[in-house]
Length: 117
Image 1 (spheres, one colour):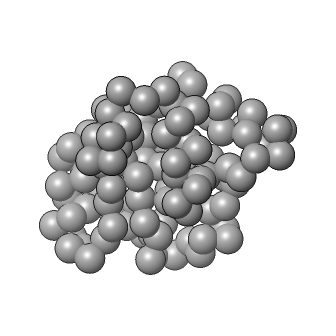
Image 2: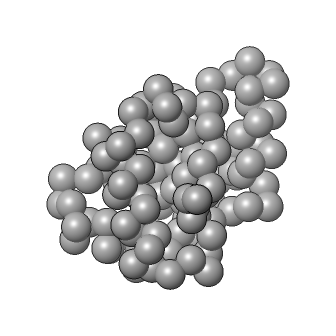
Image 3: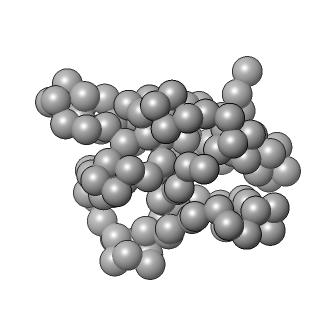
């Protein structure tokens, strides 16, 4: 199963729901590893180094920083970009489906937008 790095402003209700639905899911919050105030570039680098999927709502900067990493030849972490107005139950369900169905290779170097389809 995919492990996640949870961005600072990611909806806590979604994280709680993911944890309730699968207590074994690895969800590491940026604040728990000293990155609460870190720039997006630093958060993306940590996700890449640790092989984590970044869970974020940040449509403003994360996608462009992620693709800049590709252009620079740096490893690009996987990013699940969830619309912040997406219904919580739908977000939980789609993230769980993605976590179970996408292999690490399918997510590597990709920004996946939620809701899917």
